[in-house]
Length: 194
Image 1 (cartoon, one colour):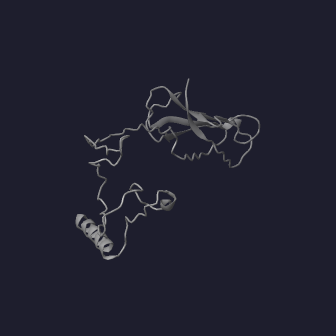
Image 2 (tube, one colour):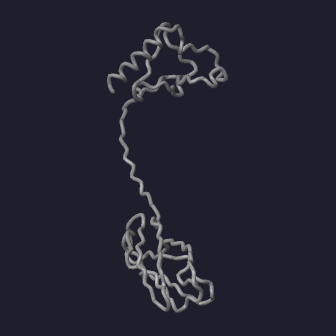
């Protein structure tokens, strides 16, 4: 990779020297309107010596002499230069989310009481104990729409692990008055508990 980079730089260098381009040719006009749109990083009064084309540096360099002039017209030279290495640390907060889709199927016969366990997985373990809880769009459900609740969702008050295993759905067959196959979508979110 290093050899390819050196070959690339040599190729660019040969192209620049082989063409008759005057990269630094700057007219001595004092207006900046001539340089608008040009990528000319030097001061307007700066000119390259004839036949000399600057090389593109491999990495940014620290200037060793200043081009700024003080009030008396003297060039201000840099006395010291430093290379500063900075380290940045960023805290990224990812909210807790339920990442599992849960399909619960059960068959209830007569007045049977049916308990169906299920697991809920979060995207990460909660950072605080006894702080987050699960919120269901409905946890008391009338699955057959007869006005009598028959299905209940139970979960622990707080969720403290990435995988919550103590959840279950309880269906009371005695409260289901209509036979059939029923489907219900319940949405689960994580909220801060009290």
